[in-house]
View (cartoon, rainbow, N blue to C red):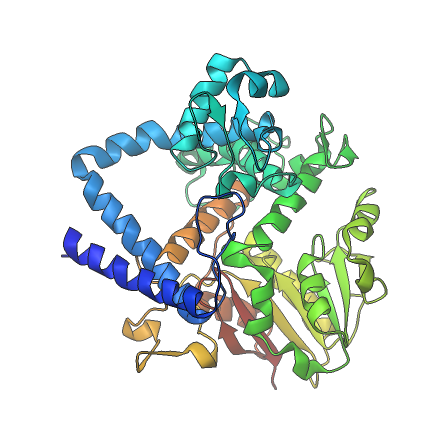
Length: 460
């Protein structure tokens, strides 16, 4: 078993890799200063060291806390970490604190309308997670963690959706739902329906669409929760472990030449826009279920230079695909929300529209046992990465930080729609059920990314 000293030594070696790269390329070091870089470079060696550093540091922290305190501290503190974020978001303390100078508790209290005594208590918990800091007694200032949310409604959406909707309505009731319905895949067997009468159960997306008591980011009344949900998707996809730009490395978009890509269930069109900006020969059609407010919001957030190349088409993914013979049909985190029967329906609608001689289907989803690294990153220190032989990419494996994140995503879809993330073999089985001609040509997962990009073709 690993010791404290061994873990500390490993940490130093991982830090050395990152530090050497930053020094060699004259890049700034990450700190808690508000203007610190938000993330480390995407270079594979840096991301690999980063994954291992986080995993090792978490193990070291776990051992240092010790078995006597681990459970006690976890149950006492973790729920209040989320509560603190809830206060920071609802009172928008992120925007109330100036980016580059401290503010007194007294002034901040007046600014956000929260009593100073309670404000101090909330901020004291925030400091322990490096959200804000106290540069001198009686004052609050930003750190890099808190400054990231300044003026960003997407960050607030992420916090509020998870803490106001997912936790109280779904995840906190998952045990009760399991005790009542067992290992159900029925999307109505979820927390909000525990006490519902037969016929009155509501699906997750029905709740998101129909609630009209609120407002979010330009959408007032009915649909405000759904638009906030779309903003959470955009926030999750613009940085970190599911950063949209990693799509550019996972597939050779340039080889398509002049081509049309149909983005099924593309929500805000973020991923289509990301690829379109890098590949001007590609045209994208973003399909999403029609909402009275959606088209206006879609085009307002679309980069001006993409108008004419990225367009919105109302479409129900379960219905016949209206775009026939496209070069690429693309879905990102669409199928993982669906039970097998509905996922198969969506896939068959794609098959009906595909031209077997030229069309391909790209799906971006979690692969619970991991994808393959890009060819240029497949060998580390002379050893090929092969999870089947116990040689895991950094971040994967039983205690990897990406593994932990993907388990969290798996629980998220379990709690809200009774969905589940699949292994590679389970994905292949699903696609073969939809059409036995489906062949998985590639399953690429860049280091540090929680999702894999799978390329499917139809072969006779």
